[in-house]
Amino acid sequence: MSALEIRDLNKIYGNGNRALHDVSLSVPKGSFFALLGPNGAGKSTLINILADTVRPSSGSVHLLEHNLFTERAWCKRRIGVVPQEVAFDPFFTPREVLAFTAGLFGCKADYGWIDELLQRLELSAHVGKNTRQLSGGMRRRLLVAQALVHKPELVILDEPTAGVDVELRRRLWEFMRELNAAGTTILLTTHYLDEAEELCDHVAIIDQGTVVTAQPMRDLMQAVASSYLWMHYDKKLSLSDADGLALAAFKPRLNDEGVCLELGKQSDGQSTFHIAYEAAVSRFGPPLDAGVRSEDLEDVFLRLTQKDSQ
Amino acid sequence: MKLTNPRGAWTLFLREVRRFLKVKMQTIVTPALTAMLYLLIFRYAMGERQVPGLEVDYFTFLVPGLAMMAMMQNAFANTSSSMIMGKVMGMHIYLLMAPLSALEVVLAFLAAAVVRAVVVAVVFLAVLSPFVDVNLLHPGIILLYGVCASIMMGGLGLIAGMWAKDFDNIAMITNFVILPLTFLSGVFYSVKQLPEFWQQVNNANPFFYLTDGFRYGFLGIGDTDPYASIAIVLFATILTMCTCWYLWAIGWRMKE
Ligand SMILES: Nc1ncnc2c1ncn2[C@@H]1O[C@H](COP(=O)(O)OP(=O)(O)O)[C@@H](O)[C@H]1O
Ligand SMILES: [Mg+2]
Image 1 (cartoon, each protein chain N blue to C red):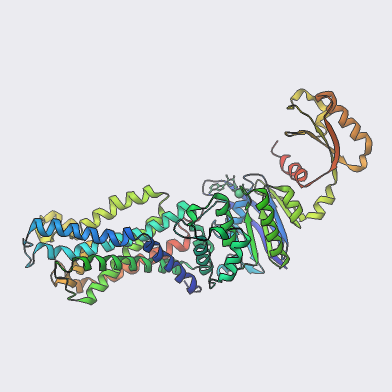
Image 2: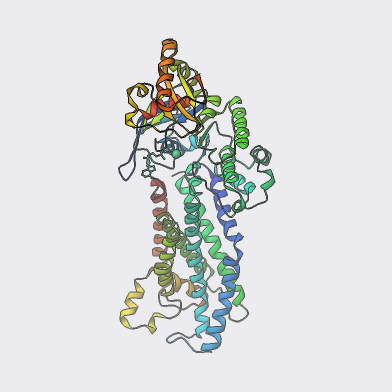
């Protein structure tokens, strides 16, 4: 059964912005689902439609086979959303905020669960403080707690780890993994693609309001199986039109450390590697260090989303 | 239009009440202090002067109207400030995400506005009671007019809060619409004191009937017949509630 079944969802904002274009997605029950896409792809728009803070223009969504748009009350009790924008109520303490959120969702405040949430999200030391006094990262963790306080079956997180430090992020994901193992379906967007690759069993990539791909993570990673030649340099590299066709064939990507060249399918073998290596050396000189690695999610993501924007 | 989440509505109501209780300065101390100031200014400066055309001294005439004005302004402030605060802080999305029907949201907000208005009026009258006769002559009329005025003003505050994008918008409505309408609702004068033209203007101000009826409940005197106005007051109250309900149901200025 699908936790979420999204069919032909469209959203055109009042100013004419077309944020979603015939989006169809199926999120399996019990999955840990990554929704990826560059900035402005329409991820938050999709999530906000699920959260009922944005109106859809057309299309349908079913949550556990219930129509989200006509059975709102039933569905809302089963969804917990962490919004992208930090929100807080300056009048209350974290514990009050959580009890209040539980109440809004029709649940009696379960202080055992509330205290567990505060502890798991490392807010226990701040329960007595007013939310005004919390840092940005703490407020974001409080939003995560708010999304979980009514024990939803589907948890949706819109970039919950933005601005959260590495260690905390790891522990947050650990918690999400436990919830997922206990049966909760989790849908998240994040900028940390390595984390998505590690955590999620399903992935969808959207770009400019359309779904570019949606499949189990393992299938996606196996289907491509390109390999990459990376070369490290201690100087800043730049590419110009004059860099010629030799390099361009390998879709070079520059980063802080050097350059990364796409070698295509592994079956192409040694020859491709040598041609690519020579092309780079003739342009940038010998590298400090070099090696070949297989494609990761970040490569797939860039390959699928950069094509049409160039 | 159903009540499917009474606990949610009750929670929202309690939050709205707690919110104004947390700022006691505004809700309890301010009305008490203004009551003392009014007492000083009007009682001692104007003396025992009578209101022309009415058999009552000026301060006694003034007190119920002042209480009503405070109720109306506080009811408006409670809903409008909560809404705009929610929008500015981003918390309003929880009202949209929660399984609350439009009716539940509106009832919770309006009930809290009424509670605040009543608290303010009680504090205000209690502070003045040693200095002036506070007679609950027609308690039914007092309650009806007080509650209806609070619902109407709470409803207007809710609509203003939904409309507004920032605190400035709310300040603008408070200063240019709510303040003049409440000040000119016959709190400080009897219409009979006004020139003909201004009497007409005054009669077109809906809050005039509320203030006048409320005062009748205490003093048994007024410019209008409060019993004749009951139907229209109830109608206006229900109309305000329906408007709030409809606007919330369609997500007016709340959902893109
Ligand atoms: N309130 C809005 N009004 C008009 N356009 C919007 C609004 N919110 C987002 N957009 C536009 O919709 C597109 C998708 O935005 P968004 O859903 O926030 O993307 P993402 O979360 O993937 O970064 C963008 O082009 C953005 O500019
Ligand atoms: Mg976003």
